[in-house]
Every structure is written in structure tokens, then in C-alpha cells.
Length: 112
Length: 113
Image 1: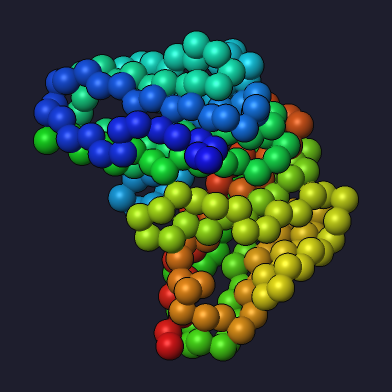
Image 2: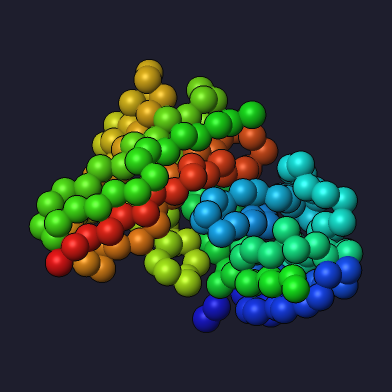
């Protein structure tokens, strides 16, 4: 069974468009995250939600807006996409940061 | 906030040799230190972790050591195999950073047959 699943796996879109990435976890974890991995493979946290509440919001443009309808879901909406947004976005979950993070398979976003 | 530094950024070894990757962290309240392996095109996955009440942990060919005083921890891989080739990330998390794991910048390990 898939533990953390995110869709879509690939996303190619034009500059200026708005797109969403969805994430769901069936592990019963209380904390979910979005990470951005750039071309240099650096993994940088963007947002963290604990029990549907935003607890971490790193320096991310406000074109990025996360939404957590419940503990098992954390979606990422991106407005006015820019070339520099091209990256792999990983969703992850854990138990309050005290255990390992389980990652989704990643969404490769390409902005053209 | 927490800052994690990881060295080296790239590491190339011959099959059968050992590989060591080192990380330092800044927040003395961090108490959980996982290591992730990311194969090409795949997601990061945990390979071993250590908590601050333990100095060393071993799992077959992989071991992790933690020096709380110096705030550094290391990953040791013995008898490396070509399938060990991947990017390895260290991370640190704890009570004061609200559940966030701060990742190092990664080490690309290449094991030459």
C-alpha cells in the first residue's frame, strides 16, 4: 500500500499558469511537509502542517499556498508560475518531526 | 533556527572500500538525526537514524555515530557496493523546531566497480 502519494508525478506548464499538486498519507501521521528539490539536489523545506495547522512557513513566495483540508492531506497551489519554480516537489509526513519522514514519489514540475 | 552542514558534497570510492559522510548541526536541542538515501529519480528513504541518547548505531554495513558535545554525526558505510551509489542526506530535528527536519545539502556517493 502506498504510504505517501502525490499527484501528478510530472507537470509541464507555461509561465503564468496556476497549478496544484495533491498529497495524501495513510500512515496516521500528524505532520505533513512540502519540500523543494532543485537541480543541485538540495532539499529545502517550504511548509509544515501539524494537525491541519501551519507551523512552518519558510521564506517562500506568496504565490505558493498550501492547504490542509484534514490531517491526511496537504495540497500545494502555485499561482503565476515562473521558470525558477521548475524543480521536484516532495510531500512528506512524520509524527511531529520525532520520527523519520516518509516521502511521496515527487512531482517534477517544469515551467516553460 | 537549525543549520546542518554536510561534507563532502561528492565522494567516489572503489567497491569494497569504506565511505564516511559527516554532518554538523547548530541547535543543541536537536535530538533526532536520520540519514536518507536517494537513488536517481527516486524519493529519499530512511536508511538509519540515531537519537541523542545514543552514541552509535549499526545496521549491517551501515553505522552512524553521534557526538552531542561537538554537535556532529557521521554515516559510515563499509564494504561498499555499486548499489550504494546514491545521494545521501543527513538531517536534524528536535523539540524547538516544531517538527521540522533540517536537511544537509547531500553527498553524491559513487562506488566504482
